[in-house]
Image (cartoon, rainbow, N blue to C red):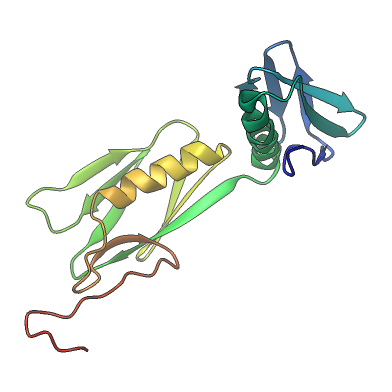
Amino acid sequence: MSRIGRLPINIPNGVNVTIDESLVSVSGAKGKLSQSILQGIKIIQENDVLRVNRDNESKLCRSNHGLMRTLVNNMVTGVTEGFNKKLEINGVGYKVSQQGSSLKFNLGYSHDIIYNLPQGIEAQLEQNTITISGIDKQQVGQVASEIRKLRKPEPYKGKGIRYQGEYVIRKSGKSGKEK
């Protein structure tokens, strides 16, 4: 039995879960999310607890068991608390500004980069920190990854966009001396 898949999912107050034959929908204070149910998986609602069960012991069902439980748990967490990722911008002259639902980056290229935020994602700016937030964990992580990809941190001076708390391994310069 899957260690993750067998754990129950507690449904907090104010969250409504609807289970159809092939779709599970979760709605709460922050919004509504839905996910198709994977093959060989059944979701059972008992009062304020959701349980994820599998039909058989095939390799596909076993791998989908823990995945489905985690997806539903992330949906419940997303509609109640939401998710966020923080990015730091390091470098002389590197700037970001918000223009409506898009971000304008000045990252040392010959042109400014305009990144349009998808629907359901919000960005907050504080000096050199960008906070990406939303209710869908996968979408928040994808947007943060795409923004980081605009200018990855380089190993010599550490300039670029990085996740908050990310450690960048630094290299010494041409002389080969350690700093």
